[in-house]
Each structure stands twice: as C-alpha cells, then as structure tokens.
Image: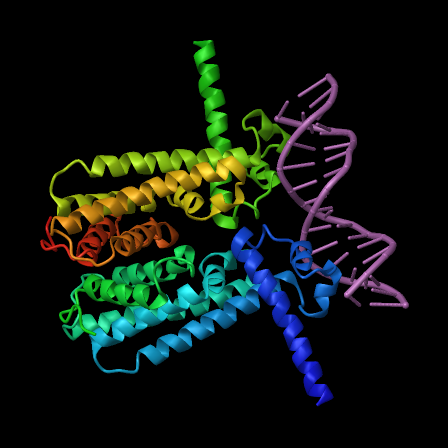
Length: 202
Length: 202
DNA sequence: CCTACCGATCGGTAGG
DNA sequence: CCTACCGATCGGTAGG
C-alpha cells in the first residue's frame, strides 16, 4: 500500500517532468529548451530533474519511441478489415485523430527527433520507416487489386501521411472544427487521393 | 570595375554565409546551430561572420521573408489562368517544384521560424497566413462555381499545402523520382482531393 | 528535493 | 579577416 503509493507518486513525478518538457519542446524546440526551463515550469531546481530522468536526450528519445509504438499499434488495429477502401479510411482517420489529440508528441516524431544522435536517432528512424513502409505496401496491394488507382504508391502514401501528421501543427481544441470532423474529411481526402473506386464510402 | 568586383565579392561573401547557415539550420535546427558551426563550415572565425550579417536571428528572418515572398509570387503567377482545375494543378505543381528544389528554405518557413520573436516572427506568420488565405479563398471560389466538391475548403487547402511543403522533407535529388514526376502526381492528388470534376486534366 | 559547482559553449563586441 | 574577451547560459555532477 505504502509502496504502491510511493510508486504512483514517483511515476507521477516522472510524468510531470515529461509533460512539462513535451510542452516546451513543442513550443520552442528541443534545442531551444533548457533543463532550467523545464525545472522553472515545475517550480523546481534543474538538478532535481535528474532524479526522474537520465538525461535531456533520453527524455526526447523515450517520448519518440513510445509515440511511434503507439502509432504503429493504432495502424495495425486500423488494418484489420478486409475492404481496402474502408481500411484506408480507418488508417487515415486514426492517424488524424492521434495527430489532433497528441499534437506535442507528433511534433517530436515529425521533427525534433533529429536532435538525437547515434543509436537513439536510428531507432526512431527505423520505427518511422516501419510505419511508412506498412502504409506504402498497403497502398501497393490496393493498387494491384484494382481498388486504388495511383501510379506511384510511395507518393500517395507520403502525401496521405504528411497531410495527416500536419494536423498536429494547426489543429486547435478551441477552433471551430471537432476532431471527428477533421478525421472524416481527411479520410475522404485519402480515398480520393488514392483513386479509390468507392470514393465516399463510409 | 574595381568597385563592382568589390560589390560582387561582398555579395558573394554574404551569400556564402547564408548558404552555409541554411545547410546547417536545415540539418541541425536553428537552435542546434552555433555561429561557430557556421564559421567552421566556411573555415573562418566566428566573429568574422558579423562583417556580413547583423545577427544570427536576422539571418533566419531574412531567409524566411525572402522565401515566403518568392512563394507568394509563384502562387500569384500560377493563378493567372481562368480554369479552376488547371489553376489548382498549377498552384500545387509550382509549390511542389519549389519544395523539392528549395528544401532548406522550406524547412525554415515550415518550422524554424518559431525561433524568431517579436515583430520578426509576426512578419513571417503574416506572410504565411497570406499564402494560406489565398489558397483557401481560391478553393472556396472553386466550390461555389461547382468546379470543386469539398465540404470545408479550409481543410482541403491545409491538406494540399502541407502535403506539398512536406516534399521538402523527403525529396532527394539522388532518388529515383524527378521533380517533374512528383509535381505532376501531386497536381493530380490535389485535383482529386478537392473533388475537381475534370479530375485528371492536363 | 536542495546548494554549490564543473568545464564547455553560447551570441556578440572591442579593437585593430 | 584576426585575437582577445565579455557575461550568460548550457547539460550535468557532487554531496548531502
């Protein structure tokens, strides 16, 4: 009981640090954020942060890896149905929903990960490539089956992925459009873009 | 003659500094690049750079403003024809061509400008908004005329703009696809996405 | 969680 | 274009 409470409290502290860092990294960039900035947001001294994290770069690395694993899992779930059109819609809507609701995390895997080096950077790149490869192979299969009509599946997948991830850059909770509205429209965009026969299906 | 040579040399120096900075800013980010890094690339001392530029931030600001003005001019040129479908294709292809051939500059106006503050930042934001607004208004007009079929022109314009600018992130000159191939495909993507009747026109 | 402190590096200036 | 130098700040450690 005491031990459990202690673990929760420590986990809570760690999550607090990660949350404050994420907000600052997204607003000012990883290199534009100092450990002192993060500590200030938490009303603590900078050295205290090292009780909860190994280093500044480990913080970024952890966020990137966890975010990409989450995205990969969502992608897999969205690929469970048999209909190509519906599958593309679900893959796109899922990605847009995630981008709109995890804007800071998406900014990390979209750009900030470049500040990692060595194996940490490569691991993030590998996860990104895995995600892109699955998207691309899926569109390739849909083209072979005749469900999609697009000359270069790679370009279609890049276009769909990047327009969906970019939602994280401009979406605002206070804005006029709900996450669902954006997700549905982008699902339709993806179907049209891929030249899907059953264009507006849903 | 001597004076002209001198002006050329000075202009050349300034361009050298800007070019080296642009490469490093694109690779490592603005905050991840020091004046010493730029100087090292030019095999010079860091203080010497200040003979050619006012400050690190002025360097970024100048690049962003010039790049956005160039993009706005290209956009205007692409909007000269009367046909909505052809106009959308030209606007998109022009943007993709620019993104593929000015990858570093596009990275600056897409993200790095956040490291500017005050008026410098606002000026860049204003130019960006001007560009986005013209794109959005154009799609709105095309929808009213019945040439496009899309429920929310704002979302269609965001999708087209962001997928086009993202070309700067992944395009490689050494890659298998020419700039023209990518531009044409993306032009088709934009027409489909906007629900343009004459979908594949060109 | 704190204070005290480390060497390295930051953007930029002075002066020639 | 250089050397010499500025105060500020960087990520991180020691020690409690």
